[in-house]
Length: 336
Image 1: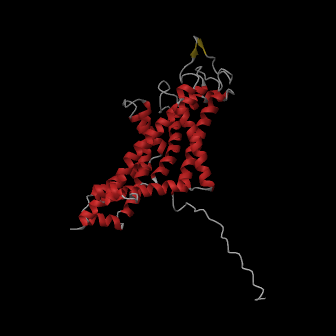
Image 2: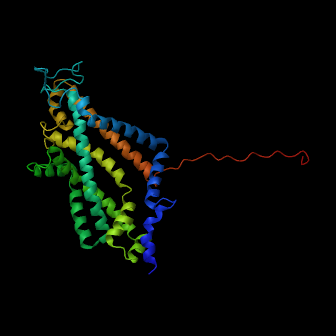
Image 3: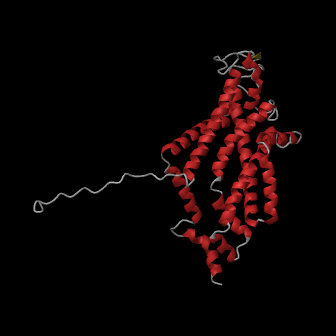
């Protein structure tokens, strides 16, 4: 009977000088980021800086872009078609007389909106399903594994095209949300499989068995003891999935199943429109959207690889210090 008051008093341990366990775990994670050295630190810094540039472009797109994403006139005069890079149009214009630089800048906003929504939806769906499936098992686990394996077996771009086609007649916040939902279906099985595998091993741990023996309900065990111990790899997966989502979004736009050109600027659609221009020697309509896709994918990949090297204890290398031996004492004259 005395164990119940002790368990209830456990969350108040943070009132004293010692921080609570969650704060200590968070401090250790940030300490690992601060203590990163060598190649992991370089990858993380370079990727973070490159990603920050695209975030700035996305947030301040109306202030940075010289024109609107679909603007083709200024002061009552229509822009020239397929005009080369100049002082008025630094990246040139398209066949629709639209400024390429403005399309690239506003395309960064579209890409980050879709990627953030897709990753958030995938985490909110995949992580809870993985926790429930791994903890309870039984028929629920078999059903969810069957569904996730069926989704995982599809080619990811084909699956995104099918979902985008099914959602094309459903108005859910416009093309950005619809495209994000189509990409979400691709990545939910990945989070589910990773979290479920971690939950299967963590549910047999001693602290979980002790919590269940003390009468803790399943909701408490999952939220307080399992969740913080099985989601350590989710940020790394989310970052790598964000890089892959950029390519998926570009593929959908290139095939015509992405965001409509009248709703927002999208790099994949611009590449598809630039195919005919490339045959005529017009290079600027395809170069800059393609370069933006490549740089953003590289940036997110570097962040993901850097986080994996820093956060993963199996890959993290501790900083070694040279061993210094004490100086050899000089012999006394009497010993000689």
